[in-house]
Image (cartoon, rainbow over all chains, first blue to last red; front, side):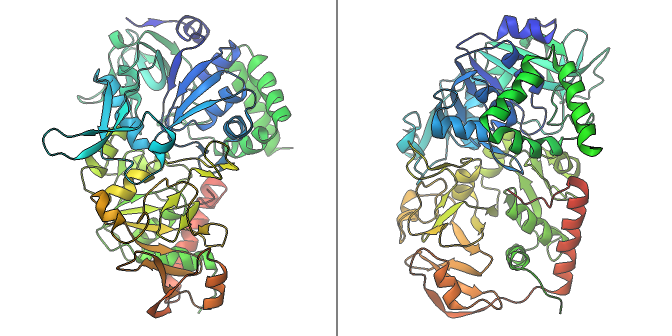
Length: 288
Length: 260
């Protein structure tokens, strides 16, 4: 049953060194506040899973939290490269990063398999590509009815899944809307679930069929306003495209990145303090 | 007639390939620009589908990321990512898959994974995204990409998304549902697969581009179809709509929307 606690308490309780961690959100509702707290608490040797590593995993990889990454598209959306991810893969900095590369369709199916408590996913995928050559976990299965050969890949079963949502009620039932990505499947495939939300409300007032995660599938809930920044929360705030572009510069250089992480994450108390710093630097950028 | 850039010619030529009413699975960047230009000109009933889940998106400005809020807000419906890939793409409902490429070879195989060997890449590219299954499951595929000797290669370093593999009937033997790439639109020309060898050959050169330039910008000894002529120049209307779209996008995002 979900309990309302602080983000620091939730990460301390639910994200452990060596865990397989999925922090999902497809461009929308990326749980940045939680990612920062994982860096702040200096978690190590995590096996990270995420369809689009985005800036959140670029930061965690560069900060040394990750030993392994399962992903399907590793770019800075609309901007270009993820430099910390590239530096880890190309040069092993700050440490070696083992990668398991899949396609979006595969990873989405693999979360569905995890949520359905099945050992593997089946899809019509990868035919003719080189993926199976570099990832021994991409295999095939023959349909017992038609004889068609289909791709078979292992289910994703995170130790902990972390998502950000718009609202939860005081009992801890979670509501999200807009671009939903794979969050529901990522939650249902995990052993433990942490959810950060924009706001805690008396009642969700949601229509039938809305995407609601009942409180009994959630382990911990944290109220973290703007917790998805610099991604966006539909109905609350827009994507911070200025920051996504600025990240290209910040992350390109190891020293500059390290200084940024120290100043903005390691030396801040929490995400609220990070946001105050961030807002101040945006004001500076506009009025130098 | 106003003047236009090679990039504008490429986008216009790509937009023209989409017929009105087509259901199109759209990649971010150049494909999204061309598909939206089609929607705003000759193909108002085109259904744009993005892998983040929006079906029937009608964004007022170009999305900067594949999951921008304006895609969800203007869509007929928004479904989850597993659903978009399972029911709508694999389910066989996409007429056209519209893709970009980092590296492309003579049999229209796409590489967006690595330059150099996989284990020790010279350049680590973003990877697959939705493209491998789009290229196999969409009924046909359009590829839009800037052309140079560096990225139009004899053989890609890594097959991320399959075109015609080694040519001939190699793709047919894989038994894929979709028929594969039908056109590659570049800033110089339009290439189409040879009906037998499946090798990409130049089908039409953009105005002002000569054969020597195309040969010099292709990493294999590129051939020309016998009836290869010139693409039609962009109309004033096409250019106006494209420039307005880019201006609106720049005003909204501070950039033009197809940088990556």
